[in-house]
Every structure is written in C-alpha cells, then in structure tokens.
Image (cartoon, rainbow, N blue to C red; front, side, top):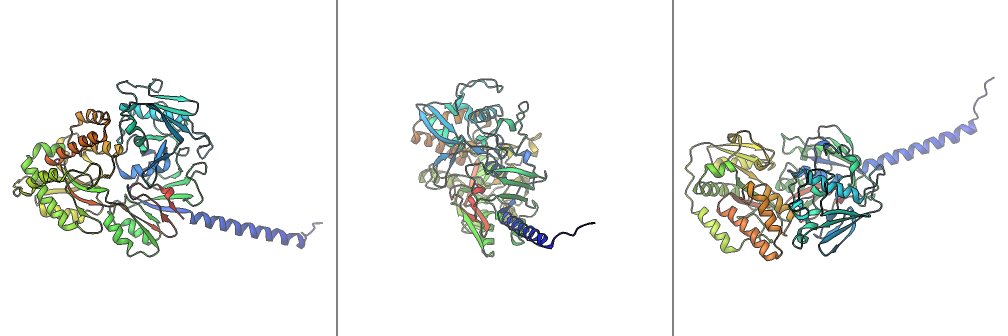
Length: 516
C-alpha cells in the first residue's frame, strides 16, 4: 500500500522552493545590473592581445584591464602601488614589494618571481612601444633566453629589485606604469614560445571568461584583485562595433545593446559629445585636449616630395581641415605636436619660424596622384571631403595602422602621407615619448631612434632633456615631416547608473573606474 505524502509536509517544502526561486531571480537580476556592455572597436580573439606589442588604442585598453603593472598612475597623475604594494629607492636600486595576497581568479599566487619573469620575457620580445627598459636595466648586456642573467633584475624574498643609473631613476617608475610592463603569471605562458596561453589566470582586475574568437569577449571581475569592489562591473561584455559603420556604437547605445562608449571608439570625440546631447540618463566624460590630429609624411613621402612640396601640401590640408573642424566640440587649431603650456611646447619665435614658410608656400603644383592613408580617425567623411578639396588628385583610403608599424613588401604600396590622431600629453611622459618616436612623429630615422632615446634618457637635468625633446619636435615640424592640424579631447559616454571616474589627462579606459 502506497502512502500519500502529508500535505502538512508538502506545503513548507513548496514555500522553501518558492523562496529559493525568488532569491535566485534576485541574484540573477543583480548580476545583470552589474554587467557592463562595452562598445569595442576591435574584432579579435583575446589570444591576439600581447603587452609586448601594442600599436593601437583598443589593444592598450584590453590589456590594461586584464593585466596589471607593478605601479600605476592615479587620476591626479601620481604614481601609486599596483602589483607592488609598496616601493622605495636605495641609491639607484628600485625595490618593489609585491603584494602578499594577490592571486588569480583560480587562487594562484602572483609573486616577485612572476614579476621577474614578466620583465625578462619583455626583454626577449623587444617590440614594446612604450619605453626602452633594456637600456635602463641591462645596458649593453645581451639577453637571449630566460636562463640568462641580467644584473639589473633580481629577487630578494618577495621584493623585485631593479638596478639602474642615476639618470635612469627619472624614467624607470613612469615607464613601469604602462601596459607594456604588465605582470603575467609564469604559469600562463608557454615557456618555449613565450606566447600567453592562459587569459583566465591573469594579474588584472578582470579575466577572460568567454571568447568567441571574433571579438565578443566576456570579462569577469577577479575578487582577489586589489581593485575589486562590488561597485565595479562584475561582468564586462566587449561588443564588437561594426567596423564599416562609424555610428554603430551610437545605434547599439540607443538600442540598449551597450552601456559604454569608450574614448577609443570609432566615432571621434566631437561625434560622441554631440550624440550625448540626444541621450537622456547618460554621463559624458571628456578629457583635456590631449589628442592631436596631424598630417604625417611617410618615408616614401619624404623622399618623393621636396620641402617646398610638403609645405604647399601642408598649407592646403591645414586650411581645408581647420576650416571644417576648428571650434567644433573641443577642436582647436594647433601648429605643434605637444599642447601649448606643456613640457614639450615650443617657444613663440620657434613656432613663427615653422609657420611662416608654410603660410608663404605657393599652391601645390604636383600632377601625380597622391596616396593618402587615414589612420583610425572615426567618421572620415568630412576629413576625406576636406582632403579632396585641398588635394583634388589624390587617392584617399582608410588604414588600421600607422605606416611606421607596417612592413611593406613594395614601397609603392605605402601611402605617401597619412592623417592620424595620436595621444600627446602635458607632462614629460616617457611612454608617450617612446611611442611617438617609434611612430615616426619626430622625423628621426629608424636606425637612429634607439640611440636618440638612450641619449635622451641619459640626461639628468630636466631642462636640458626637454630642450632635446623640443629640438626633435622642431626638426620634425620645420622639415614638414609632420604638420599638426587640430588638438582635441577624448570623450566617453556611459548609461546610468554607471558613472565614469576616468582621468582627464589621458585616454585610458580602466573599466574598474566605471562604477555603479
């Protein structure tokens, strides 16, 4: 005989199940609220991102959120602790005390040995674009394998010790804040190829939870990280933008498919600022004018055009582009690479000596077609129209990379000039200076760049050192290797309740600073 279940017992069970269901729904709802969907102008797998090889803004943004450096810079421009809980100098030796409790999401401890490994790995992949670490630490010492010793790197207990020169002290800490010097757990790297093979166990505040290999990447917060809090996004979804549509992030934002448009979006800052006016319940973030739009002659262009030709081209392009953009949503005319009142700004008489010959230039009389590349400028329609007006006989096309970072099999494939919009800065920033040097903005031949940087970093007196930087900028401007057109801010937009707490001094997007 089968006994029926007691109704008196069944009711409490149903009530408990009902309450569990409600709690689960609330947790699911809370998790959904803590998910930040980010419009991301890149469509690559996580495995394509490499700290030792950063050429574009999206690469930097991804890496600074997934890996952390030894030290960081706060919103006031101060260097503060990162993977290193504290740091101090003993003469020319920098001691970095690694955090005792820093772990990956799977609980793997990150130690001074991981930090040592990461820096040695960087020496073996000498492609990083933000700072010459080898020169500061190892000098002329050849470093060919992980087993080779570098007298400038050692570990004592859980302290990483970096030995440099008296002049090197000026640059070492500022260099270490960049994403190039991210700390990568040794266990996450293939020791034979040095390729990162594990993007889950990372040193950053976020780790890769899902990757569809087409750019849609899910990052989850690492609760073991020092930047973790319940206010930061617990999950981040990178939503690839339609690279053929410069307004795709705007459409996704309006439709609720994304919550954040970053400073490195396909759309320019002026478009983001204008779009923000039409979107209620959103927060706009705008930096100072730390971006410069400039005309850059490539190696090919420098050979094929005389200085008189370059002046004539610069005059026409500057007139057309500034007429279209100057005064619109933060854009300002500029004739120098670094912002006015910055450490690298030129004196008025130097600027006059650069500007006068360009203003006096005759109309460009060249008849052959000019090949112009537009490098990641957002919506290029207006710029293309301005260039077509200035240089009617031209072939204008979009290209994803600065020509200095591309290896061309044939020189005729290289554009003769490009219009590009790199970062610049108000303070002496060795990371940006090194990147600008490698990107060809200072008209220093490739074969001479390493020596110039080593000489620059060897100068202890800041006034003398900045004089060398201004000299390089003056040479580039007076030879018309570059012709600055406009300065502009960067802009980001977040949907409420997300608030943006990013710095106004750079284009970085530390996503843990987008908080509820």
